[in-house]
Every structure is written in C-alpha cells, then in structure tokens.
Image 1: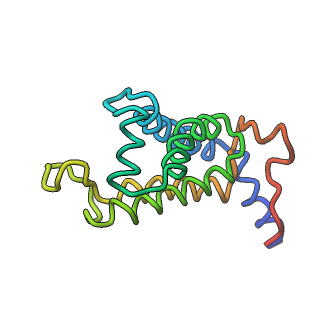
Image 2 (image 1 turned 60 degrees about the vertical axis):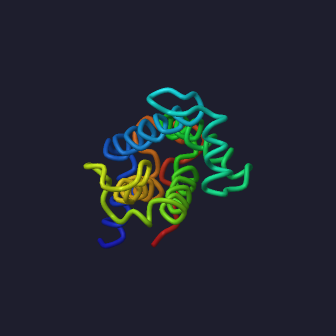
Length: 159
C-alpha cells in the first residue's frame, strides 16, 4: 500500500501544477534574460550587462555570458519543458550565485520604498525562483512538457 502511495505521489508530474510552475518560472526568467540580452523591459542590453557583470560584480566574462544565455534561452527551454530538471538545477545555482554576489548584502526583503542604493534588492524574489525551480527538479515539467517526447516523464528511482 505504501509503495502504491509513493508511486502516485511521483506521478504528480503529470498534473497541471508542474505546468503552471514551469510556465511561471520560465516566463519570469525570460523577461529578466530579455532585459540583459535585448535591452527591453527597461534592461541595459548585452554590452552594458556584460560590463556590469565583469567590472562591477567581477564575474569572469564567460560566467556573465552564461548567465545571460541561461536566463534568455534556458528560460525558453523551461517554458517548452525541454530539459526541465537539469535547467531547473541550473536556475537554483544561478540564483544562489545572485544571492551570494549581490542580494545578500541588501537583506531579505525587496526594496519597495527605495531605502537601499539603486540596484540593491533583498533576496526574497531569488528564494521564490529557487523554490519553483526545486519543485520542477522534483516533479519534472508536468503536462505538455517536451521532455515527454524524449523518455518517460516520471523516470525517477524508487525512494
């Protein structure tokens, strides 16, 4: 009986909740990637973002480039449900790095009232993104994920 319950819980990836989380995470991440790559939605574009990453944050150029690529193109793959678990792990690593390199010093809360210097936000948003990504690592992409075309949607070892 317990084994049957466990298997039913693992099949949760086939419901709509993972789809909703996948679309939400992917669309939010895409908008941030579009700011960095294309300069839309109030962003600064690729060149200025790379300068910020390398000169202000002191990231290696390759890491800055990978952040931009992941946020823009990785988010599209997440929306499509392609490589959901792997890309969600990358999202967790990305936002862990964002917290460590930038948002930790501003505290937990986002800066709704302009108390912090410009560009300094707390890490609550980052934790939300990490929580959605962790959910997708556990569940997979859910309904209508492209991952379903490349294997069993619930390929997970028995617990």
